[in-house]
Every structure is written in C-alpha cells, then in structure tokens.
Length: 393
Image 1 (cartoon, rainbow, N blue to C red):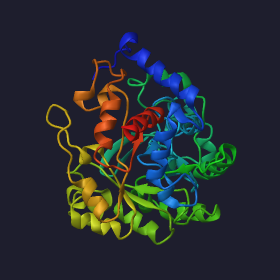
Image 2 (cartoon, helix red, strand yellow):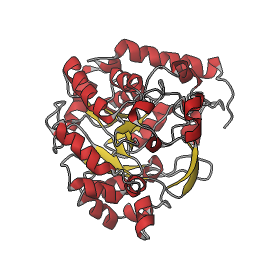
Image 3 (cartoon, rainbow, N blue to C red):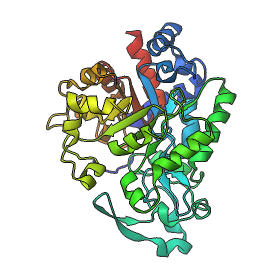
Image 4 (cartoon, rainbow, N blue to C red):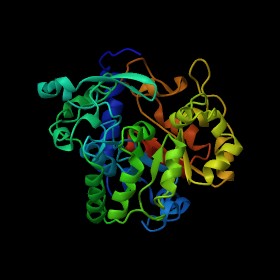
C-alpha cells in the first residue's frame, strides 16, 4: 500500500465525524450509546463494578490497543488517557520491556528507534547496535542498553506515520512511561472517573530478556504485589505470546492471564528455544486449548484465526475457535481492529489511500457475530460505536 497523503473527501470527513462524536460523547453516556444498548452491554458482562473480575466487563469488551494509538503516539499517557475518554473498557498499558537498571517501561518493542526520538540524540549514537531478537536480526537502539534516567530524556514519536500522518503532530510531546507510573495512573483515573479503570499489560520477549538476566515475570509480579493488584479480581489482565511465560506468572500472581496467538504457522519463541515442535495451529486445537485453560483464563488470537482471509484478502467463514475456546472456559480478545484500509479485510476497504478509513463498522459486525468476548482496537471510539450497533440489533 502506498504512502500518499490522504484524500480529504475520502478519509478526512469520516475521520472528523468519528472524532467529533467521540469528543462530544466521551464520559458516562459514551458516544451517544442509548440506554437500552448500554444496559444490554452491561448485562452481558455482569455489571460494571471493579471487584467482579473479568465478569464485570461489558461484552464485547473494547480494549484500547496501546491506548488510543489511532490518534496519538502509542504507549504514552496521552494515548492512554484518550482511550479512556473515548470509552475503552480496558487500556493496553503497556508492552513491558526492561531497562539496563531493571525498571519496566512501556514500549512496543525493546528496539526504540521507531517509537522515540533517540536517533536525534547524538549522545546515544554509539548505543545503536544489531542484535538477534527472537531469531530476527534487528538494528537500532534497545531499552536494555539504557538506564531509566537516560530513557526519560527521550520522547515518543508515531510508529507508522505513513498510515497516521495526523499523529505526527504529537511527536515529542510525551516521555516513555514506566509500568509503576501506569499502576499509579490507573488508581488516579479510577478515583477521578468514579469507576474502575482496567489495564492489560503484555510481557514482551520474556525468553530473550531472561537470557540477559532481566527476567520480566518476577519484576511484574513484584510491582503487582506492591500495589495490591495481584489477585484474581484485580483489574489487571496480563498477556504474552510465550505460553511458558504465562505458566510462570500463574505461579506468581492470581491475575487473569491470556496467551497471545499469532498466525497459524507461527511458533512461540519459547517453544523454539526449548525444542517444542508445536505451532499456533496446534495450540488452537481442542487439546491445545484445554492445556492453555489449565493455567490461563483467555487467549488473544489474531483476527485471522477467528475468520480467515482468502488469497485476495477477503473474509471467508469463521473457524470453530470461538466455540472451542468457550467450551474449555477461555475468553477470546482478538487483535487488532484498525480503521485504516491496509489493516482491514479487502472487502471492507474504501479507496486506496494508506491512511483512508474503510468500512470498519462492517468489519466489526462480522467479527462480533462470531461470539468473541472483546477486541483490541487502535480507535476505541469506533469500537464502542460498533458495539452499540451490535448489541442494539
């Protein structure tokens, strides 16, 4: 897909309409949701209290992916805050990676050349390295080579400017948050908003960091215990692409746990390291799901595992994954819904601009109809509106 500027007629008007609705409607009656639809949604999740654990969440649950990353640079307090303002039920805050001195910070990956202004800091020019990250040679700057104090001198930038040129307006505005700052922010927002705020952190590359003497699971558990958020009913869901990392966490904390699943032919990196031959296709079979259910409460599959796409990129028929996962008691929070054309199934795209919006509401309807329990989205306001449409049908 090209990187041309957006066509105002094709994409700007739709985007402005969505943002306008979001800003005007943010708050208690989110985005103009009717009382009936709101009540139906809440009943489906068992209420909106913070002490009921996963059952307290509305369904389908709207998870702000790295905040409201469709509108602000991801994993910043600007993005997290906006996700709540736009009605997200949970904020994915954040993807956790360690610093050289052992702190946990929120970045999409340990390599930060694409998400911060580190390249503009000549004092860090010699930190640029090439490393093998989960079998892939990667060149850039890595969080584990910086102290927290050094990382705090950097500022976040938009990760995919070709698709989100409007987000570059906010480059340089926010620093890199720590996980402990996120836990404190969660409490502040819960008090300020008068309702429980949920977060959904992800442990990134646990095997890679354990080999470097920077294990993630113990650090996460220690912080959760410190802030008394390590219980089954705590409003913190923890996720990872490495099943053994989730198994390890299951012995350290009582939080809801979720195993992330990539493409069917992919292998979790911890499986590669230990010689486990299974692929994701094996994990989504009934036997694999039963095993996951023995130590986790949910799965986070890619959307293509729920409804595959054909050779042209169009949606086909749903798989049995939702039914099979529910049969063993697992919830499903697939990823990731985005408004822009390149990320949508081909039959829901409109035009060819890389940052133009397609028929995302049609796509939401198709995915919600499978019975998924929620979805990650870069534009939470769109997800909330789509849920309103769905529960109101």
